[in-house]
Image (cartoon, rainbow, N blue to C red):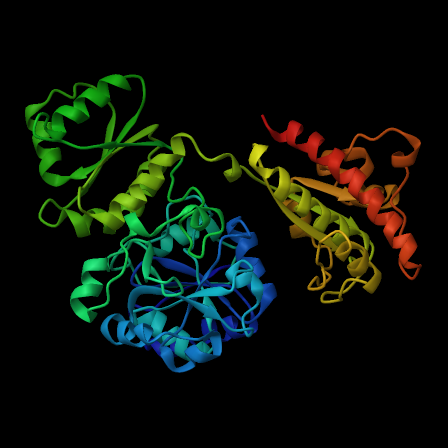
Length: 517
């Protein structure tokens, strides 16, 4: 597809946004600016559209999304048991960069909230996002418009870098005002608490509303990191390709002295600097940088808190584009939102093992029996073993000859429910070229399915094998195809489940070894 960039700096904004708004209603993906960062938008009520967001970003399925609304008019359709504090906070800060964690209603698909009973909702304060949301007249999920793990997008050009010709529309209204994501406030806990810092702080909330909330540094617990209600907690974020190192002066050493020391430690590498203008001028005038190749990206020394946050993502992307190996980024003590993002960017030095994301695609004929059973069994096994794995696997299933939206067969649901796995919400998907291209592993149920796909994609035949072949099971009981149990007895489905379960256990070991390097 060809991406259309809709520039709204001139002309009638409402008229220019008609096509993107219609696309959102239909379930297409539209990137648009907010006051914080650019968002990758999808109709929150269309599960397939939301799933497309996860696929495009490479976003883990347990990372919940934020729903965007123009105002609070329809809040009670999406949230229930809304506390009075919400309405006080709304009047004080909304529209604005404040996200609320509330108890969700059944209107929203579970994929939006990663299966949690809560939902994150905010009301962006930006003329284009406000107008687009009003015209679309649907709740819109809109995570930052970047590939997961990369620096967030604060300009339309950043969105193009990651998604050109992958989405139909990018709405361009220049650089975003704030440059860092919204504050996330949990109103479902006994004491309201900040789960993600932003420009609105706990002190701001107390001063303007009298409501006491736990600040970010005090509000998190182990459960939040394991099953987060807010984005930005569990996974590596905001990281460029280059290694990021924080630098900061103190009463003993100036920032310039610290920078020079780090420069010497990386004498054979191309360096990037993200520091304030005043420090850069001192460094150039007072220090001998010599012939070192240094690329600078500066922020204002007059308002370092706001300027550093506003420019951080743009700086990381620009310095990456300049081909630097290491980025020295100035720490700004007291700038909570900025320092949170900078800390996460620096985490790229030793990324968590779960951030090595690979995709596995199970393929059968109708995508109502074998492949959804295999996908569910794989997910269950992966959840048990993930902590010891160097890879996080994203699991898909599809059918060669089916139509979208068919339910899993009753017997498939029943025999998996016997072992504590629920696939009652499964909907079939027709296999597409895009699915095949994006998958790292394609596991078919039969040799004939394998042969068909290998003939269709001869240049990618090495990633297409039967499930038995991937599992490296050579014994007679496992070398055979996984036969189709469709329209047969529950006992046959149970045999299929058991065969798949044994293959999945072996498959897990083999593919994690294969892809660990």
